[in-house]
Length: 471
Image (cartoon, rainbow, N blue to C red; front, side):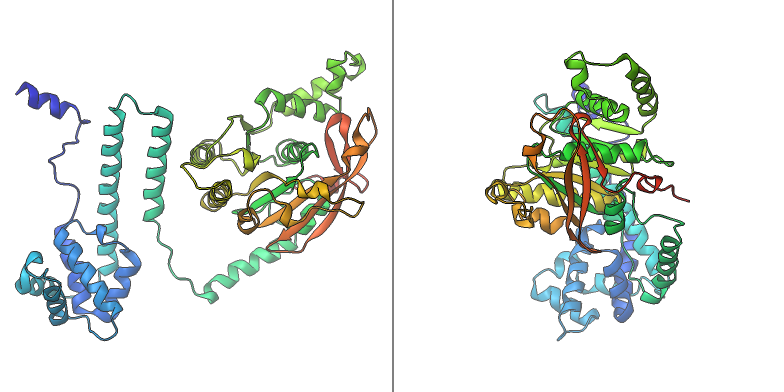
């Protein structure tokens, strides 16, 4: 008895391995009976709702459902009681599912198929509960393994649960005529400036070209090292979280800089005081008011910084989901893609980058928020000499999958030689929109102030360059 108690105590309260998992046998029979009684309409309804035979708890019902699907796909055979029995007989599985008498009982189990969609929802509900039991039981077993990596285990459990949630969602087929009124109103609201098509970056020429950072899109900003892509990304973040009337919550995953470095960079840029003034002890006491004002303004920014180095795509996904749920983030920024890692072993770095790029795009779609991801360009750009040398899509480092996955690919370009030894002043720069899946391309002129690591639109400053408030 003591040994039995110990085995049972190894499971959570309410969970016993010998306990039948949630299911509804009568409903399973009703769904299969509906497919036999009215195959013309019922089979399509069931396929749309019950995409896998695992939605049936009984192994016999799973086998019968599989056979019905095969008959439905075979245009030379009909879906009826006789054909089903013959098909199972040919596969030597008729007796295993209960024989012809059991199949006939399925046919007679219902009088009408009017409640078929409701039955399918019931099957989906019980299948989801069974999958949750499997995930929790598997997690429990792994938790007892003292050698397990706790952080990876938590991430895997979160991913499994999120996969169950996504598996529950089925997307109904839409009729174009039903979609048009809503989309027409959306376009009119954008035209009348009642809403923004995306989150404005604060750089008006870029926003006019791209519509801002739009939901579900992957926006790539690429450059060679030391051009200023991190500074430009932080300028965009500052515009979105601080300098606009309607601040948005942003998650910044920095794989290159620490959170302290980012905080200092933002503070000095906001105050327009060079960070070097502190290291060189050239700070002017007259600038103290600007610095304290910047602290007060930045302290209210809804910016969440994660400086984890070597982040994997599964870690990014788990952290992004948590921030989306708890902090209601509206934008993810990643600095930068090539410093990330895939979750498993891959044959080549190109394949790994492709998996990372695809994973980032999936996060944007799943959370329905934009992802601004920084990327490195390869050395081929440095071989192109002359003033007219500009970054191209072929210069994206290590994988063409980035170009394929991204909705917008842009490049930051400037002459690095002009900033060497520069203590003040500005240099010209360009934010080049090279690929825009839903719009035009453009070459947007910027001005870069190296001493405070700040980019600004080349046109005269005005309130038009700040992100506009959503109405």
